Length: 196
Image (cartoon, rainbow, N blue to C red; front, side, top):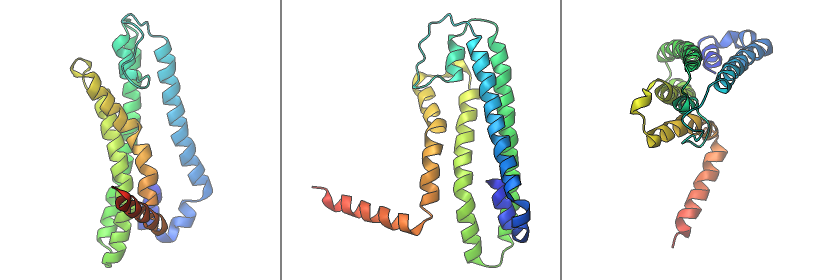
């Protein structure tokens, strides 16, 4: 999305040639491929761990740091290497996003019209906020020491990076639609006036 916005804002006359269907398919395949590779590596490594501290995970889903707490074998180092690989991949994506957005913001700040700058910022900032929330909480979840974690903190962090960003995405992008904002305003007004 950041590259698409970069091309749309910084090179609008080349948007059709740079963001053709082949480029979009290549970028989607790269994202899906990286996700599948990472998940296959994690799954294979997780199944090879010996669990000697029980098999109860204190989360609402089987998260890798929680499984590592249950492991007693020396093979957990392989999982740590895979986590470092995944974090490096995520960090590379984050750097690409930041570089794209720096270029976008520099181009937007040079625009003479305040209305155009506002429209460009309102398009870019929600995406950047959701990505930042996801990456910062995921980094925190995977990089914090296991000894200092509490079950409640682990649950809250897991909720922040696994539930909140996917929930916010449709809300943020649909709120830019006038009809949806109007319908939401009607529902909220109706609910407020119906309170006893």
